[in-house]
Image: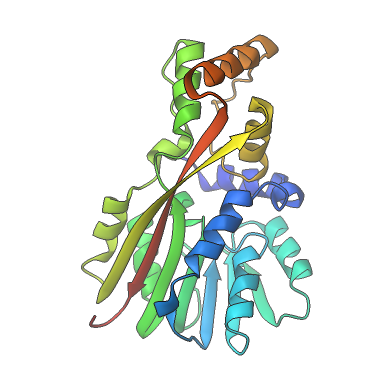
Amino acid sequence: MITKATIQHNFSRHATRYDGYCRIQEWAATELLRDPSLGSFSRILDVGCGTGNLTQRLRERYPSAHIEAIDLCPNMVALARRKSLGLDIDFQVGDAEIGDLGGPYDLIASNAAFQWFRDLEQTIKHCLSHLEARGVLLFSMFGPATYRELATTLTAVLGEEVTVSAAAFADGERVAACLQARVGHLQVRQETVTHSYPSLMALLKTIKYSGTQGQGLSGRALNRQEIQALECHYHERYGAIVATYQILYCLARRGPA
């Protein structure tokens, strides 16, 4: 289990580098708001806002809405505030899993954050309790197939079973099960994005600086020979240094369908 302390450490330590390595998260934020059926909203909360990339998109789409945003990591929130000066967004540091979120809101949105919550079902219930009667919970999250090539390659080269932190993320069926009995309308869809990197170190830097390494390799550092062997295995098996990102998109509306 990835602890909150680990998550906070990973994101806070490299907060200033995050925006340079969050290409997939940016993609997911754009796709999340692409649904034309979303309609209009007047009071919005962004959960796990990070450096404010989804928050700014929400402001662009809903220019007259009251928007609040919350994140566990003070360094990320500080960056989000600086980036969003003049946009009339209320940022706060807090634990969205258990803290008072305020509201009620007609939209609670989140991008690439729900996979990190310790208790996904309880977090979903908590968010729904802060929505208006027909409010919408809209979020994207990474699924368990994320970084599958890396896990396979590490296992083959190191000669021991290696499980990346993403393997513990919830899949679409589990997400749907957490919501079905609690909402009037539910859409869960999945997208798989495969991205190529110029080197293994480029992939590892992306994982590190975007905060997605979870617990890493349990304190084990790769040496130069292992990195070379890993790159050779990647090219032999996949033809390039690639990473799969499994992205789940969820739209849940309270009340009758």
